[in-house]
Length: 314
Image (cartoon, rainbow, N blue to C red):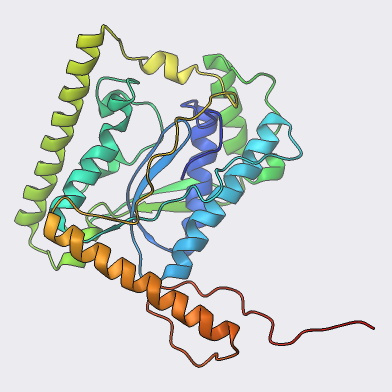
């Protein structure tokens, strides 16, 4: 999920309190299974297990709406178009090696963006601690009670840049106002079950590969910074960073819907996706002709039913 502009998701305690609250509230009915996530300044990377397409859409749709409502309250805006139109990419991964690569890449984002040297020093909201503390079991979970910060209880910030004391006081005040808590539950190893992997030794070995690949990503980023003479922004500066809506994002990259580092699997996935799109187009064409008996392919989100009659006022 990516914003249309700015860097609103700073690493202050106040923002992290609100963001964690929103995630827990949205996930209270377990729409999807949360495995891994990292929130950057203007986007999020989230690894989930999905059993129902509509629930997946509800998950990121509610997440975006509640974060927008919270940001409007914080900034004192009546209207705010926070998210990039069609800026959410739900990408399908179909093999273990690819997921290893993508989880490592997810946690390497702060280093690749030259924010910190390694994920341990990143003060933003992420599931890194839960991942490292999880047992090597497909059922392992990390759950914490998060105060539900309702939007009406969020007041406009006195400044987009808060001192450490102001930030601490603001986050504490918000948490104390909460009357309800929701559990934010992470299951870092739940994705293994999709591939029929249940042996603890194998899970431990794969998670070790993830960490090793992460260190490779971080090392590569370190070398690039050294060659260019750059330094990381650092933990302290990130924690004191002001909310910004002026940042201009980079040009859009090509959107992907399926991804695999294995060429043969990638080709097969693309063929399946092409056939899926063709089947959806056929079904919609039949709908427009009034035939609602067609069976849509599994995983399709059905559009609104087109009108079946015309009305002319004389």
